[in-house]
Image 1 (cartoon, one colour):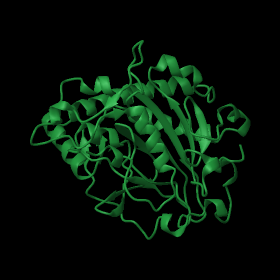
Image 2 (tube, helix red, strand yellow; image 1 turned 135 degrees about the vertical axis):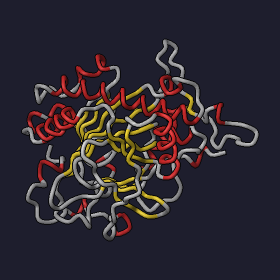
Image 3 (cartoon, rainbow, N blue to C red; image 1 turned 120 degrees about the vertical axis):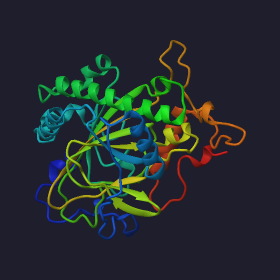
Image 4 (cartoon, rainbow, N blue to C red; image 1 turned 90 degrees about the horizontal axis):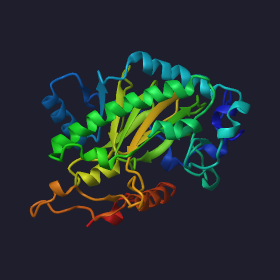
Length: 344
């Protein structure tokens, strides 16, 4: 367990050499917080909300939502719960530890594969699947004792909010009602702890990347998230009791590039640790039927016309995820995106 950053970083005076990013991967100079990122009130008129969401998805690939239906009390309880989890004695977390990012419930450090990294990220992550709950809850942490009950309720409420937003995106694009109910089968959570860092100019929480999935919902308690727009990095201001919503590559493909996924990264902090509670909605590798039909990702046929031909070819989601993981594991600098091989 000594690999976990949180197990040894408290009080260190310098960044260990295997956490020092090469100059081209460091966060750079001071990044201003962007004041233009849309904040959308989900209790407003539905037609207005849809237009605001579509505009945000086209311009930023990201927005924040308030009055979303997940109670302030529940969000506060999650912050307390994960503070307790990451502060538990090492022996209480041993059974969850894994050296690589994988299926099931795992606790790991840095990126996708610690052993193959030349330099590590200043981050520990607890990850587990959430849907269907009854299938996955038995693999979740047993401590703190209330973990399964509280996180189960939270996952249910975030799922309601998530499909409310996805359905509005679908309506705005002109897709059939319930389109995302079939495509977005999987839901999982990743809870990232970014401990205090003695020199944030040298270390990174996570490199710039866009998510491979459909859509992502982030609850954050401290500044650290940055997005890239028009070739420049800009900060995302944490708003109390809001969710940050960002689009993944899969939704960019389904929309036939009408909507954009967003490249984002996380910087470290010398004065406070940061915990982010992230929920991902994604296609499952196969349809939930006996013959295990592979999920095919492609531009929605409703959005393809003779004057608006498909931008991407069709492909199996599991193949795309494998290519994505291989791509993001490459060291910077690099050109292109994991979408390039699928462009027509």
